[in-house]
Length: 170
Image (cartoon, rainbow, N blue to C red; front, side):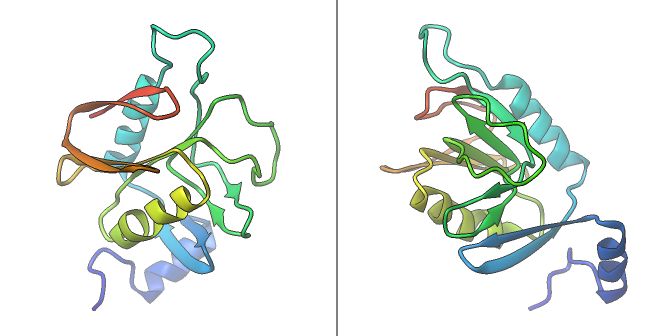
């Protein structure tokens, strides 16, 4: 079945030429995604603006976060989560990070649900990440996966992540 949101071959060639495609490899499965639209980016920005350590705890996770950063996983997978959360600032470098985040937040773009909903949660959890948050702005819901299970909430929602960080999902 064809994806009505995916570019045709001429559009794909142009997107490749201008570098407007986000490429990833998840457990040996290559995936690509066109650069996100404004709804996606606005959602990411709102979430990032809300990420903070809980007020009542000192010495907890610093909740340092980066958007769309390349991360090389131990199995060779290369991922670029919409938001990666680290308890300590990762090293400043020009190549993919090999330090894994403690949590990731992915915002679903139309046409790329398989990557975000089917591939990402088990992949990230399998690499020991404590929190995987999948935001569906179209269905107005968020699913929070942890090593012990998953819970789905309508948005807007405030989440407290296993790593200790809090965030608001618009």
